[in-house]
Amino acid sequence: MITLHGVSKTYNEGRPNEVTALRDIDLAIAPGVTVVMGPSGSGKTTLLSLVGCMARPTTGRITLAGEVISSLPERFLTDLRRRRFGFVFQRFNLIRGLSVLENVMLPAAPLGEDRAVVEARALARLAALGLAGKARMPVEVLSGGETQRAAIARALVNDAPVLIADEPTANLDTALALRFLDIVAGLRAEGKTVILTSHDPRIISAAPVTAVVEMRDGAVLQVRS
Ligand SMILES: Nc1ncnc2c1ncn2[C@@H]1O[C@H](COP(=O)(O)OP(=O)(O)OP(=O)(O)O)[C@@H](O)[C@H]1O
Image 1 (cartoon, helix red, strand yellow):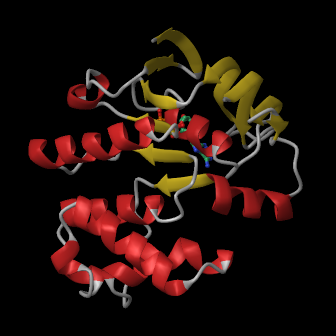
Image 2: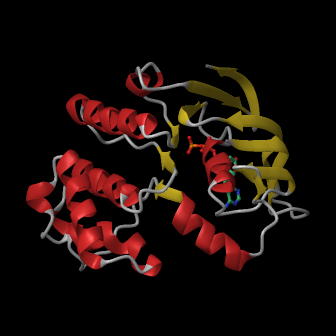
């Protein structure tokens, strides 16, 4: 369970370009699949970055499995991010010059797991996303949708309990979006927590989704579950 208590986030505090992206959010995110929706600028990405320990709230408290994570020192946050979260960013952050497989295996490197075990898991994730044939190719040759799937495979490689994905199906056709939903359904069945932002009606109304959080102007308008 992830909880947010009175969480606010203000960027550029005290400067002329100050923006309050989140205002006094109280939210509980249970294992399963939560979709965060809302207009552009409503605070969806900011919410994900706070939950994923990539930024700290200006005020308020965030807990993960009962532990307060919003006030941990940076050196603990780095380790927490690697072990507890997989991320799919809007800009996929794949590294040019490396193969698809090497990119997918990257998040596992700091954890010291046996390379063959990681490689097998990476190849299985790539195969599930229809990318087995591209594993040894450089990422530069992938199409937009393939790049997105490689980023999803990379987010899953550490088998982390929480997957955070910002608009994961934005570049996928319906068949691939459905394949992504199959993977999400599998993660849900494993008891994992998946948090997605999406404008995509195929995602918001999909069977594996357990909760929809609707945001407006930095606040939670309603939660449907
Ligand atoms: N690093 C930052 N510095 C300053 N302002 C920011 C930063 N990140 C986001 N903002 C501002 O905070 C507000 C919320 O942005 P956020 O990216 O969280 O919204 P969003 O709902 O994810 O939007 P989109 O659907 O367009 O991705 C916006 O006004 C945005 O301009």
